[in-house]
Structures are given as structure tokens and as C-alpha cells.
Image 1 (tube, rainbow, N blue to C red):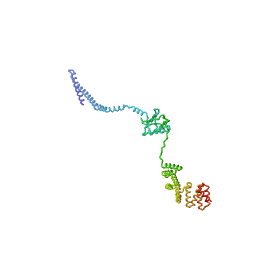
Image 2 (cartoon, one colour):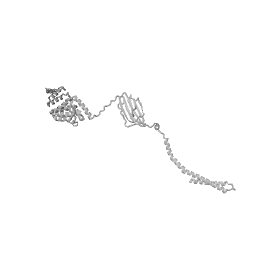
Image 3 (cartoon, rainbow, N blue to C red):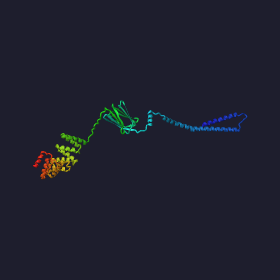
Image 4 (cartoon, rainbow, N blue to C red):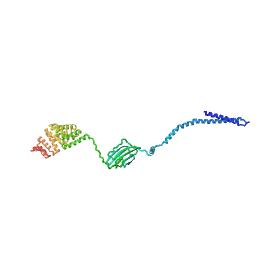
Length: 412
């Protein structure tokens, strides 16, 4: 407001000077009338009010509008400058290429290289790149084709890919990722050529050919045999030893085989028969007893055990054991021949004759069964039937000299 006071004071002094000059300009003899003086005062008042309004308007404009606007400009200016700086920030060459590629190239789903398998064959090496989807690829070489470069576009690399190049045309293989691509570098043996490169169900196959690559012979891997398989191997070896006459070595192998596979009938039966043949009756009896505990109806076990009882003078026990089962006579005729012999030994001739009669009908050329039938019939007093049986015995398979002499003596 000091500025306004100063302006008003200057106007008042200016008015006084003007009045004084006006009086000096009036010619002598003349004087101001009352009307002229009033008009002069109204004019000065109008000028004063007009000047005051101008000053007030200027003050209002400066304090209320101009100064806050200037402050707003000062506050906004740094932000405006910063925004401009961001807009004109220069891009690097790689960023410009990337921006250009993103603006031109449409978005493509990225594939993944899961694993790589290298398979050697005769003069050929097959490299299989297993991917999640088909991709674009490129291949190049240098150093007289000993360095091969394969680029898999828009592909990522899984961890832990390290295929073996042993016995192949590839000396080394390396993988790395660069600009969303997988780069595969292979060092090849001299004279190696690319025979084929293409996709087979998301698997990119590279076939390399080298005339100097030797044929790969698959190594035979030893597989651990199961106890049953080991038992069969020992059993076959034991059979070979029996045929070669090495009985004792065969018995040892059969014993080992039986321990490996206790439920194998062939092994236990052969082992028991070999023991009986070589005089190890007690051992054979134990082997058969254990077999009968788990397989009580198996005819060969019963028959061999009954033979042991009969040889030990226990015909009743032997007969009871045979009567405990009823196998097929067609499948086990010797089983019933032993039973008939035991009936005859115990004096039960009719039971013996009935069994021998069935056996001779089953195998008419078996001379020994005709002899057994003749003895059983003769013992029951049926001499004519016995003579007929003895005669049939002489027409069948040859008898031993002792048995043949017995039969001829019964016919005389």
C-alpha cells in the first residue's frame, strides 16, 4: 500500500503545480469565475478516481494472479523438463534392434530342449534333440566341416543336458543360450558329413555319416539271475555231468539247485534217484520226506519212498504209502506195478492179479507184468490161466536169463 500512497502524493503535488501555472497564465484584469472553478475540480476528481482504479487493478493482478501463476510455473517446470529428458533419452544399438524386432515379429511360443540322445551305429551317428514343439533351425560349418553349428530358434535349454559322444563321429558337443536361441557346437571327426536333418514328432534328428566309424557292438550286460534261474542252470549242468559219468559232481550240483528252488519237482526227483542209485538211501529218504511235506500227492516222490521202505523190509508201510494216492495208471504204470508186487509179497494174490491184469491190457508187450500175473494166478490155484500168462511172457519183450529160466520151469 506504500506504493499507492506514493502515487497519490505525486498526483496531489502535480495538481497544485498545474493550478499555480494556470493562475499564472490568466491575463491580468481577468479572474476565474465560480463555474469554471467547479468544472476544474470535477475533472481532477475524475482523473484521480480513474488513476486509483488503475493502481488497484494492477495491485490485485500482481498479488492474486501473477504471483501464484509464476509459482505454479516454477513448480511445474522441473517436471516438464524431466519428462522431456525421458522422451529424448537415446537407445543403445541392441535396444533399438530389440525394439524393432518386437514391433515386427509376432509373439511365438517358446520351445524347450528337454534332452539330447546320441546313438552310434555302423558308420552313422544319430543325434536326437527332443523338443516340446517344432521350431525353426539353421546349420552351418567351418574348418573343413569338422566344426558344426546348429541354431535352435526361440528355444530354451533344460538343465543337465550332457549326452555321451563315446564311439560316435562327434568328438565334443556344447550347448549355450544366446538371444532366446540355443546354440549347439559340435566338433566332428574328419570326413564326417551331414546325411539328414529334420523333425520326427517334435524330435529334431541329425544323422551324421563317417566311413571310418567302426560298427558298434552292444555290450552284453550281465543281469543277476533269480534263485530259480540259478537252480535251472545248475540242474542242466548236473544232467551234463551225469551223462558224462561224473556222478558225485552231479549230486553236489543237484543239492545246490534244490536248495535254491525247493519246489522244483524235477530237481528233487533227479537228486533223490541219484542218491538211491549210489547208496545214499538215508539222504534220499530225507530229501523225499521234505518233498512230500509240501507236495504229498506227487506220485514219483511216493513211489521212490515206497521203494526205500520195501528195500528196508517194510512192505506194509510201503503199501500204505502207495495206497494214500490214486494217480493215473496210464501216466504212472510203474507206481501200480510196485503196488501189485507188494500185494503179492504180502500174500494178497487176488489184489495183485487184478492190478497185473490191468497193466497187461495197458501194455501187452511188457513181459515182466505177464510173469507177475502168472505167479499171482498160480498162487490162487488158477493154473490154466497162469500157463497162458507165462506163455505170453515168452512172446513179449526179452526177459533176463534168470526170469526166462523161471518161466520155462513153470511151464514144464
